[in-house]
Amino acid sequence: MHIEPGTVHGAKMALAVATATGAAGVTVRLIAAELRTRHVQSLAARSLVAMLVCLMFFEVFPHVAVGLSEVHFILGTSLLLILGVVPAAVGLAGALGLQGLFFAPPDLPKYAVNVTTLLLPLFTIRWLARKWLRGTGLVEERLFAPA
Image 1 (cartoon, rainbow, N blue to C red):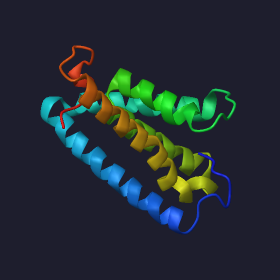
Image 2 (cartoon, helix red, strand yellow):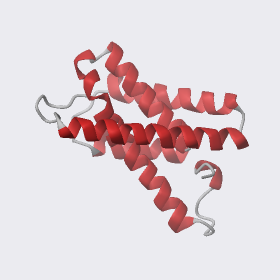
Image 3 (cartoon, rainbow, N blue to C red):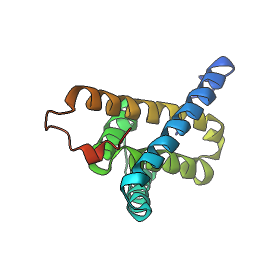
Image 4 (cartoon, helix red, strand yellow):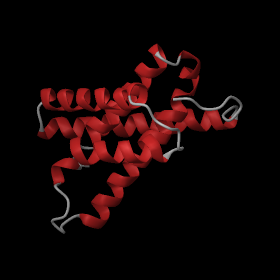
């Protein structure tokens, strides 16, 4: 979750808080839509799996920092395709929060920046897939919860 000191301050931080708040709103809306078609136990189990996978990638597996693509696109997209958008969003945000609380407390003030860079690409991929692939048979609709 590390962001170099001095990279984000002032207006950038305010923008990050605003976009993270928007991402939280989208996540809540998607959770509500998901719960209309599935049981809460299914959502909770898939979200827990996503959170555990994220924590493994964030803290346990050795990795070389390669920038945003490392976790933000590759892991997020993989979770989206395997578990669905809602568990991926909940898992990524939850794991990021746990990482900040227990492993990297100095980075916790930048939680909004990290949530933004994790969830907005995830929602963009979901939106593009729904727009371009709907009705082609290439997308299993359950992975992209009802809008």
